[in-house]
Length: 205
Image (cartoon, rainbow, N blue to C red):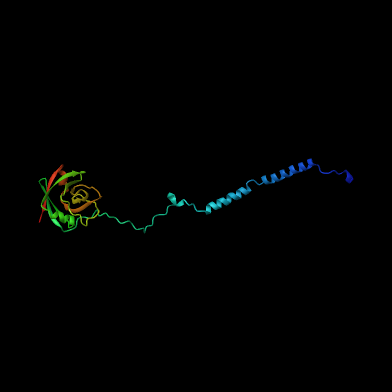
């Protein structure tokens, strides 16, 4: 059927409104039709970036620490524990509560100073159930003495901080200020004498 041009009408505003709503609905539908596409791409990008970027705290974790170098130099120790008195020196006798035991002083400055004062009698007292100590007045020389020592039972020592001559009959461990100056036989004899004890020390040669 032919309609004359005069019968066509202009598009009304209500029609335009309907068309606009339809267009918006179409665009929105297309956008929602691919959910997460751009988000997935961004997540993958971040994942790739995270895996490629080193963790700055990895070296701080227990499993991430690099092992210490095996060739790193060890710090020097001032300890002389375990080294006995010097050979030679002076043979001595100690009279301990009626019993006589043999001993020997080394050749250090401290040992020579003690040897130069023999014979002498020193009043000893118990200390920590491992040693007997007696004050030396005047103090012995400490020239050239090591900083520390680890005396063994049967050692004669000098504890410089207190000016004490020491007869060791037990293990006291390593301490600063101890100077090993000699040895004596049968430390059990000294250990058996409890309380204050006068010990006479003299040359044996």
